[in-house]
Image (cartoon, rainbow, N blue to C red; front, side, top):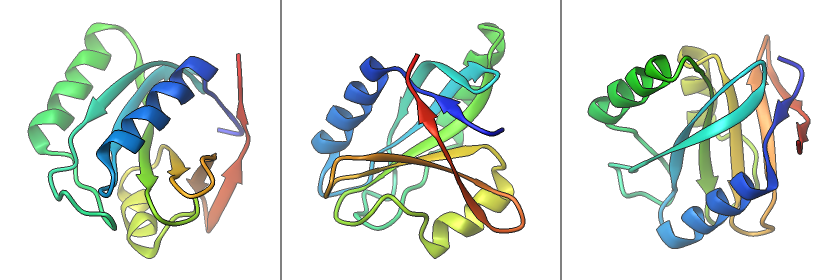
Length: 130
């Protein structure tokens, strides 16, 4: 995937959700097709940590089931970095290996969104609006 399309309204929902979850990281699963996000599935960070996130198996199963019912794909994973830049941490990189979708990270410091995929290394891809 060379880009991801994320509507301004979805950015607003994700940034507000992230700000409300501070000081902890927030997380969500992104549904859509062909790189275009069409639905957000907000999830709980069961770690309740400012430096890590984990989505429960129950919510993961529910998300994949919902995506299938709506004939969409899970195209991305979203999470926030409340007090750091929107760049994958070492922990993020490890999880990107087992979740080979686009990872969108929101920085609570400068309020920006950045998207990444893991190829042989971390590669930033553009986020476009529709």
